[in-house]
Length: 466
Image (tube, rainbow, N blue to C red):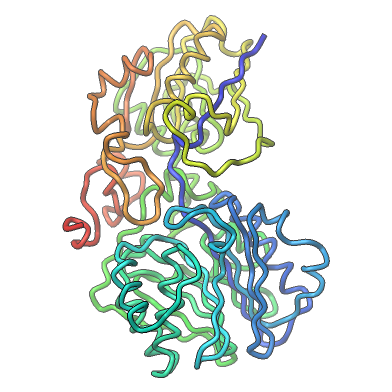
């Protein structure tokens, strides 16, 4: 009888959210449908809450709630929503709790008129700005750091739109990809290091679309135009697209984990094909440490491209050895270690006939706390594997992240406390290998990536002093 594993998704890293925006010169009866399908394509980036704000003649209406996109937006909501500008958001909470008030977009009214903001990322100095705003009489309604952005914009509104934007984003530090609806304009902003992704596309009718990933553009039939640059504002209105470089000191350093784990494999981010880069990590894993084995299996879903690459490079057959139950509901608690050992987040089931009597290479996208990897290896042995060789398609995670990745404290990171040999013994593998940092750089084709969780070097110097 096959055995289920209680696959602990808290073992994985989680990214904060996904954003989507659309601008049309004329009102669309189906604008909510475009946002809906765009958010569905970004659902992997956050399953806690979903929301959309639609602007008609400058008047914005926001609908949001906890739950999946398909749970939050009913058919009647989609049919009743009309406008020419819309933004949407799916959320996984990193800063702020999971209450409904923290769902986005966040909407305010100020001298600029109605304004709605959706934010992907994490600020590292929100409390400082929040205290200054509260001293000036601003009342906060949520516990999310994103509210700092919308309230600061509202406070600076008397200066006009562009100065308010630039003042706000020059004051906040951290990672942010923003979509904003205000004054019959759609605005996209990417932080000075481009840590979080944001791209722009165009529909056949000339409407402009912004999204965290190109897969969301594909879902609504938009053609990818380009990525928003690090330190860039794009203002989209009836006059077209205006691009503003708001930070001359911009230094591109996008998050490497977008390509390792967060992004959908069919996305293209900063010109890099996500599937190809993951496939190449498998090739590099084989090249840096060969092992004799009978089969290669990948941990669904993000470990599969690397497993395909490993199998192709090694000549060892790839087989589907693990099946993922896609219908397990998400929970949004921060479990204790004891609960983490038992929590049923996503269940994996081995195919015993593929594994029994085999020497198995199993490839996952990463190894963080090791709790899931340990249970996974035990499960494979129970299914009859004679040997289990574990390969991580990312380098060892040794440092916490400050920029929107929900990652354990350093003391919980297995690689920060143990050597590779000790980790191998702990998880019960016959052998263990992590992708080398220089090989990750090769698969990404550039050194212009944030790899702070691997080497402790972050793109913002202020982080070192936190």
